[in-house]
Length: 207
Ligand SMILES: O=C(O)c1ccccc1N[C@@H]1O[C@H](COP(=O)(O)O)[C@@H](O)[C@H]1O
Image 1 (cartoon, protein in one colour):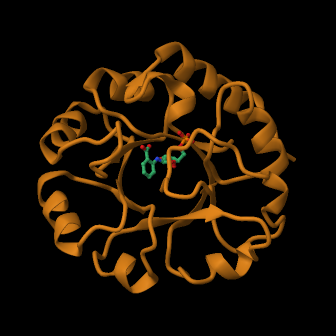
Image 2: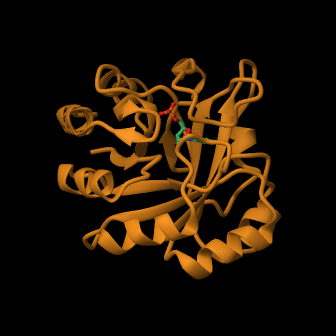
């Protein structure tokens, strides 16, 4: 079964709802312009409330390294997610497992692109929208994803309870990542949508 990350958690109750529903990971956005941004203090409170065995992912977009280090001192993040133009040397300096987000564009050779971060725990593929680093709520063309991969793929971009089963069947990702598709409003999760999303992921059987 594809692993599930629910990203853009801003409230303890949403983190607990995601964990209760069966999410493998939650994402905390440390990107101030996002409506889903959390402060390190808010993040620490959310993480402290979580039950065990839920991976906590911290999302950053092109920040100075000292900011990531500062957050790491305050929040026990299991995994870092770099969602900007960070190169491998930048991503690896924190000595933490990380995901590198790549925004998919027509004509890209995604195998070569992914090879630029050989030590990443996974490559997260998201939709490309000029001027918006992520959380666009838009789907990209899944046919652009290579069938044969030497990297763990986290599929993101406009996933919802209505399309996630088809996405998994077509792309066969290691994990799926959703933010806007399970929200009631920006930054506020909808428990029914989280439950429906996870039920749909569980429903798919990929051969
Ligand atoms: O969620 C955000 O606001 C955000 C801001 C900046 C970079 C990434 C962001 N979110 C990530 O975007 C993808 C797709 O989100 P969506 O499901 O299309 O809303 C996902 O990885 C989020 O973690």
